[in-house]
Length: 365
Image 1 (cartoon, one colour):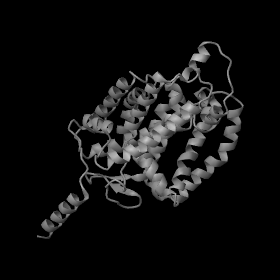
Image 2 (image 1 turned 90 degrees about the horizontal axis):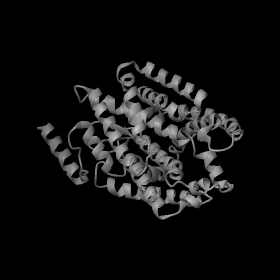
Image 3 (image 1 turned 60 degrees about the vertical axis):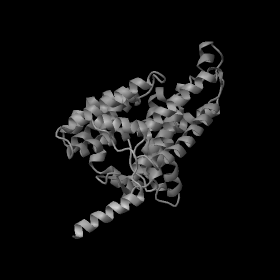
Image 4 (image 1 turned 90 degrees about the vertical axis):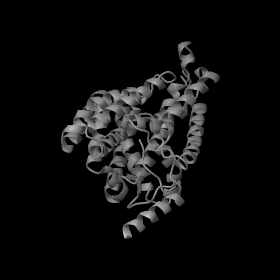
């Protein structure tokens, strides 16, 4: 779940890409930014469930207290970030499989190990956060893997579009939309979506304009079915529309002078997305053991805690990646995927320069 950074020792390449630590495959920087953005949104979604906010009051039959902050989250966060997260999982599935085709005799076996490893991580995390999505994604990833690995890319993309449309039309998204969104992400990656997000301003602008036009009627429709949008079809469809707007809007903003700040905040989060997802869930679960969130009537304390956690993770991730190639959970996952230890320490710029100079001299001789 990652891409590389020009701010942590990687070597800049073309059009927003950066070289990987091993120099083997370019990585699209915006994908890491988008993953980091999704990590923020997912925590805002999950933190209420992890802390069981207001659950004790509900079980006691207490009256519901209106909360404008929660209403705002219903319109801006809930059902908006999960589609992005699942879609990016599909993108990563294709990228890793494509890389495995050039490195392994049985690339499908590499992917099976990767998905089984994710299931193990999800099972361990379930000890503190039973509602985590890692086990769910790994199982459904194994289900759709034959499609991604064996059928033409047009069929993968077509199946993703069809399943996503049907799942949102019938169920408003949710778990039913996960297989389609994974295939949609994999198919889009096969057709070069990471490059488009980096380089095609016109294409991104068209996507943003279409999402912006559809957002107002989608929100109007969602308001006709009040409550948690995760449990209504209008809320789910409005979330999908706004998810497209968030992705394309962030891509357009990334092309402005704000890019430096966006990269600084979100890229470290995205490069260690799995570590940060796991760590944030653990932090929120531990906080719920010492703070009585169950009797609270507003989401504001949980929202503030979530933002503080993300801010700390952004700083800590940058410090970690200045020295290490992968986040700790990413390192374990990658090692399990390839059945050999992944690189640990990041190569110092001076050492890299000496190695490059030595290679150049050897080539010249």
